[in-house]
Image 1: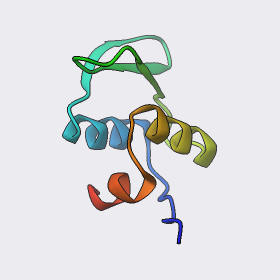
Image 2: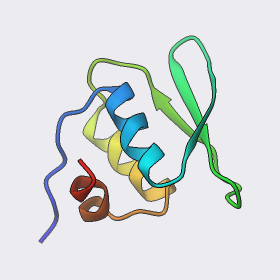
Image 3: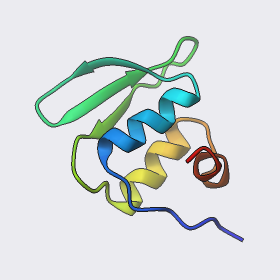
Image 4: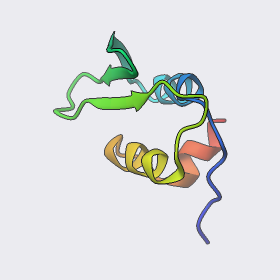
Length: 74
């Protein structure tokens, strides 16, 4: 069964990803950029009041997490 994605702001998404070792690198006009030591991927989290479900699912996948791992950290 797939876990249901919650409605989260960009800042809330960043806070959760930081629990998994991602670190704030910089902020562009509308996105927060996260990096993680040992990872070639950078995550670009939209700094919006509500992150779209598809975008959130893509960020979770790019971070190397499952939806249930991500949701359990909330």
